[in-house]
Image (tube, rainbow, N blue to C red):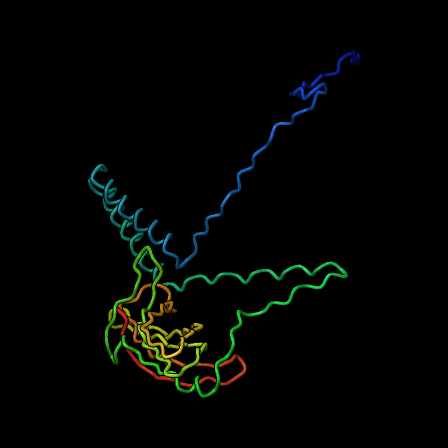
Length: 250
């Protein structure tokens, strides 16, 4: 038995009998992480909210007295709708650069980053790789992959052929300039670039579809695209121009 001083408070603990001993069992505390929601200028969520608020003002207009209350509702709803459209035309906010990793403790050597490597092909085999862009054709209009609730993509279909008896692995690089237009009004051009690692077996021919991200933010009715395609044998060597093409994305 333990005695307690006058005026002290005893806090009971839950106990569980294991064999002949008592083990204190402390309650678990679950902390649910919170996920921040960022609404930036030029982003789709903010525009959807403004357009939804505009529609709500027009819905409640009929319940208001005639005269200046309904006039103010029309003005406010139109302003919210205009703000939603203008927000779509603003450039999208760029993600901040990730923080530099912390230095390893003294005496510990950090592991070196190594790119996903592949054995470079021989120069003769690399030079014989054939490339053909199937779509888009010159000055063709193509539809992008994406809409309001998905990510815009420019689909490019190419035909690759390795006529040699050895496998070849190389980088296929796309670079392009987008000249957006909004109802006849031209905006500033935007540059895009993306590289893909490609491997072809001996005497292999196939068609591949490459999805290129749209570099233009906001809203546009069409994009005039000027594209160049290169192949590169190793990161240290110069790349070779395969073709150039212009087309329209609507």
